[in-house]
Amino acid sequence: MWLINTTTIGLERADATTTYAILSHTWSEDEVTFEDMIQPELAKKKRGYNKIENTCRLARRRGIEYAWVDTCCVDKRSSAELTEAINSMFLWYKCSAVCFTHLEDLEPQSGDEDDFLEGLPSCRWFTRGWTLQELIASQTLEFYDCEWQYKGTKAELRYQISDITGIDLPVLENNALLESIPIAKRMSWAANRKTTRTEDMAYCLLGIFDVNMPMMYGEGTKAFARLQEEIVKETTDLSVFAWKAQEGTDIPYQDFRGVLAQSPAEFAHCRNLSRAPSMRYGYEFSMTNKGLRLETYLAETLNTEYILNLACILPKRNGDLSRVGVFLEKTADGYVRTRPGELFETRDSRIWAGARYKIFIRKRVSPFGSAALKNLSSTNLVVKFNISHGFQLHSFAAKPADLWDPLRQSFITDNNGNFTGFLDFQISDTSQKFVSARIFVVCGLRVHPGTGIMGPWMGVYNSLDKGSQRSQWVAGCIDDYYASYGEEFFLHKLRERTLATGLDVPLTANIPCGAESGRLHVSLKTPPGTGDTRHDIFVNITHQ
Image 1 (tube, rainbow, N blue to C red):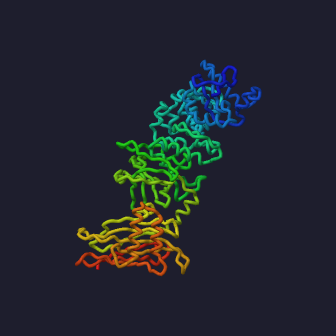
Image 2 (tube, rainbow, N blue to C red):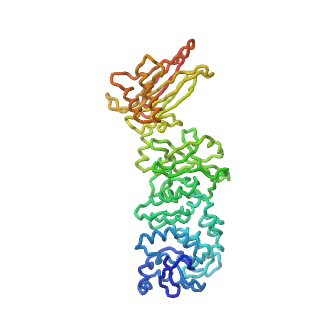
Image 3 (cartoon, rainbow, N blue to C red):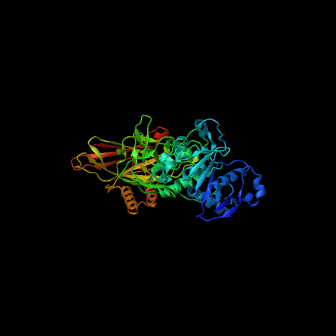
């Protein structure tokens, strides 16, 4: 790293063992750059040179021979050096002998200490992104006003600093505790901070989360997405997904979002968040090209919504503690976050008790993709059973399973005119003395030749109907589908055979109930209306 010799005020190369002081400040116009330091006479003419001189003066008083100032100790012409500096910034502040913090907008106070403390919260230094990690990382930090008059240390002012920043007192006293703080809570410390460049809102937080990543100026908000992906690689803390979308900001509000936040501002509500007590610290999850992969149990609401448990707690205004989750909706390409401006809250953790299974949640959803999802849901095939009293579903499978939404009892068609799926089920009486043959309901979407409008089609088949060649074809295709572990080819084959030219798709089937028990009559119909109901499929099962 480059350091300033506090006597000559010239740049020198130094190694990690060198003792140095460091400056924390807010940038303004006419700062001294690395190139300026090569020509001292030019550097001295710049307004920012005064900061360098005073930093060196304070360091010399303590017998410290070197100092580091971010404006001029990084050769920004070298992308490698810039990347190293940004990724090492937290460590460099942590390893400094002392950090001098210059509050250039804090006017000198001739009165008592209370006058100074009143002006502290309005200092610009507390609103900038980069100064957050400088505050936390520095072991010894001293504050100076605009005239470089000493005002106190971080330790002396820790209560006021905690109130201003939201940073926990123990972290201000010992930054080794930083890793014990939930991700979302750490994000909340940056919620009201700003950076000049959009990308820096992510880069300035690398040290807070102890991650590294390359700099890509020009990527905009994607930098914050990359930061979250790097965090996910290093933690099992699901609070990283506890953000809430904000209306009335520069970011357009969407009905559907991916699993990643768009800025630290979306964590503003997490200042008092904590981890939920558990015997297990956390489960494995990872980011893939398909999105966030995790094994979990999704709770279900009466409004047919899935809830992902984030294993964290937020206090309510009345003092009650609520366990927190996020609302999800299943799509053809994995789950997405719905109602992104809200968090699900409950005091009953038992709603998440169940067998864990693998799910994928998309990383991000564009505004266009969100609008498309809103329209696509109306093309799903919703299956509604009406079963005679005394009978029940004995076994049930819906394929393809990844396009079946069990909560809403619907196939997710993605408005695909070639969509094909099937239900494979059996009926029994409630005493289970009788179990029917397998019944197949094959369904899908197609453009009707007469109207040119896409709508549903369906057919029902008795697997043991030896007198129907088509029933045997359908049973064969379905068994081949199972044997191939879900090969899509057999769905296309099933569609071709079901919709064969010149053959009517059967909407009824009779299933024997035994020698003296009559039969089950299975019939299919779809309501004649328009709108969402035009894709409802009613499966009526009556005992005759």
